[in-house]
Image (tube, rainbow, N blue to C red):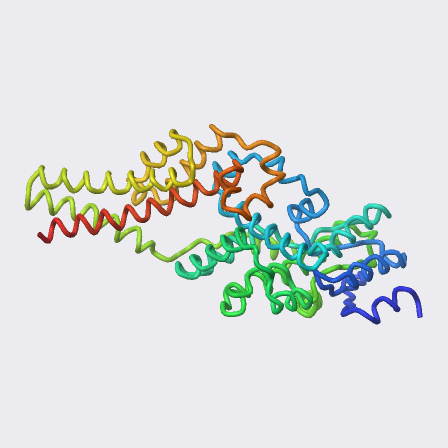
Length: 403
């Protein structure tokens, strides 16, 4: 028995031959030292001229270069509407940190070993997973409003939680996928989320492997290191896919456009405009102007209060308060984004803030001490204050009209 055969005999794996390429799919547990050893031994066997890993560029950078986050431009993240995705990545990092402290091994260590060994041996390396930000955005796009709220609360809990990871989640990691385990409360009960987090990525990774074979014709024996939970689905997709790889990847990278009518925003705007119009009709300019003032004061005051509770700069508070009343008419630009953008410009995060971020977000005082975390807090609390102000203002307007 060869060295490679000895390794594969002890690990879940599948071998698929297609288009002149032999793919050895090695199923790993993301929190197992045995998986790290198996990857190292498989690569050392010398039987592969290509290595593929279940990573995207951002996750690989986070594994092999922990300081990469410190080079982010937070202002650009907020300006381009990626604040929620940044928070999602931060939540995933915090979850992984908790696992590392609890289990004594870095989640994804076997993927990191595959990357480092491929580089050291100058073997062609391919990152086959979809960008985690795209996965989160496509997952959120499939969920309803309440499910998105639950998902958001789960992210926040991952950020601030310090409890040990439950045993059932660790067992899922041993069998499968870190993104699924991160949102286990949702993925197991949401077909939409499971489809995006697991099944879509099986299709995407299979297409990536096929595309890589066309781009690197010298790699005829490829070792693909993937979570055990992807093993069967990836093998099936790799055997059966008929779509052109580029077309399939493009389809799976597209952010699904919501076709649902934004009823909440429309109803809110209709109540506001209709209430003011009715007030003008029944009570004249005095009543209408009073209703407008109710709206302006409630939304601006509570948005400003939210920013203030987050410890925002006075100008950040003013910016959030100034734009909050216009949210029903500009839903794509939340007040929290404006307030956070001003905060990030006035109190630009330092390298030390990014380095300390994962530790600081685990304590309440750390959120206020760390400029990155505080900017995220400004974003969240300003938006929550705006929402609260809208409901209070509508209730008051309805109350005055009914009086």
